[in-house]
Length: 124
Image (cartoon, rainbow, N blue to C red; front, side, top):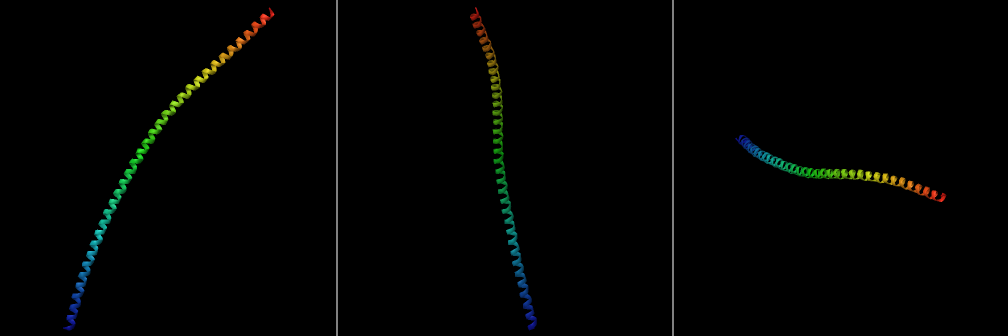
């Protein structure tokens, strides 16, 4: 009976160890599952924060782009106004040049008339 009793004790101890190991492994698996869930939740939260940051950055960039569009539109209006002013100035310059030519022609004519009158007086 000694051998049988020892064998029985060994089997019981082995069964207890196996059950204990199985419980430990189950607990470890449960902890790992919990850790995995926590990690997943943290990842989702982190992703959510990153998504929110990206949305905020995108909104900010859209605002900047809209401001730049407004500035470009304002600059286009200013440019069109400057182009109109330039055309008006060019027309004014052309008018002044034409008037100056007319005045020069009239001056030359008057000078010639004066010389002719003086010449006629001298000869008379």
